[in-house]
Length: 215
Picture 1 (cartoon, rainbow, N blue to C red):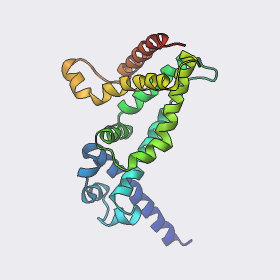
Picture 2 (cartoon, rainbow, N blue to C red):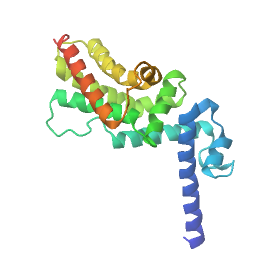
Picture 3 (cartoon, rainbow, N blue to C red):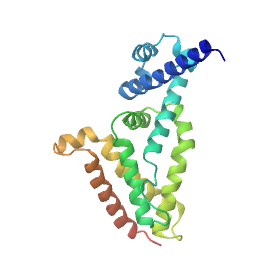
Picture 4 (spheres, rainbow, N blue to C red):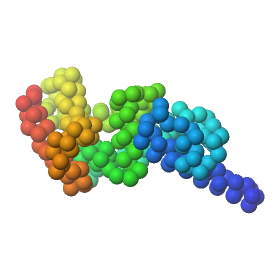
């Protein structure tokens, strides 16, 4: 490959990366429907035709951005974040809750994932189907296994599902309802230390509740 071709490939790779980063910002700020290709390209410093060239259209770019942000978030904070082999079910639950909260409250580019997923809960797009199958469903099954380990094999699947969803609900409440929470409690912050305390509370609260549904 000639030096000219290598430089061209490098420039195209840079443009693609810039488009992904710019699109992540725009989609997180105003959502898929309000976002425009023009705004994304302006932020990326790219020609308006660059999105079609690299991704096909805005919808395909959005799918790629969501997948990329989800992968980055889970790489940084996997559901078993910080636990060792042989950990107890209680330790697994705390790690799951803690990593969940860290993913949705993290700052920087990781924060885009939480914001975009919040919008997907209100106005789901076709991209959500792929995300559910690729990452969300396996993660939900992982939590269900932890719950099953905590409450015993005799409890039916529906009860396990409801318990798992109740745990997740506590996590997403603090993120999705954050504007109300900080108005009700102005001193409430969501720094890493605050998230650590919140993770401890949700874990202990959930463990207490799960004792009441043991087989």
